[in-house]
Length: 260
Image 1 (cartoon, rainbow, N blue to C red):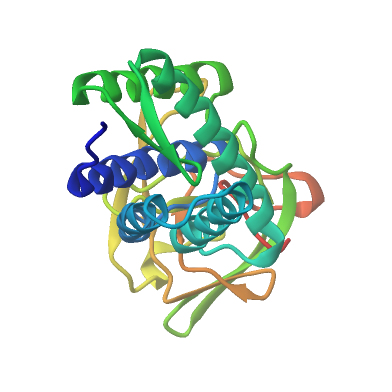
Image 2 (cartoon, rainbow, N blue to C red):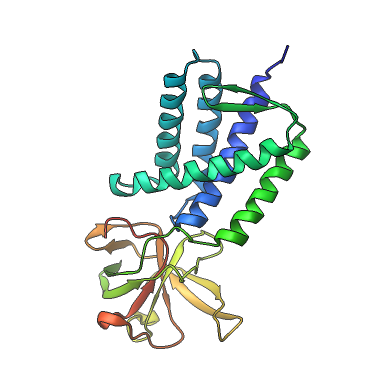
């Protein structure tokens, strides 16, 4: 007879989801706020407990997994309908791969409605996830499933000052402000005049192929519009050199730009 501890089941599902969301964010390039990351993980733990003890069945199990997947991804990334399916697919594939690695280390497991309760020590569980995390980062790499580069129109409002420019969405731009975790849009020096910007300055360390380390400064706009739609997960940083991209672009934006 297998004894299921609800608190352990909740903790396992919450921590598991937290790790899976982190990997999904890195693979997809989608911005993941820390608060949403935690809330989605805790919500997953609660839903996992409820679903584990719900009536079992093949169709119920499939529906449960789909519902939980959509709910978790929506709570974590807050995507629009166009990006929801892609992120759900990445999260689902990541879950399958991670689950397979962990199951190899387990001595057995109990399954209900597609949810797994592993009969294994915490050390083995986290060893499995650590191995999986390394595998994903080594083989797949960051933003391996990100969208292709595109040109977007950016409007950054700092009080009454508005910076308007076109930027190339490039998955190679991995720059993030270390405190907030927000992605940084690099703009050409002539676009951004610090004397006209009334906003807190964030120092951002940056590495390039030719320069191992440099420091730039980024600013959080009061309002940021990308292709006419408001976005709150980006800062604007002044590049150390001029940017002259395709299509007269004067900036480089990284991450996952929805609704292009």
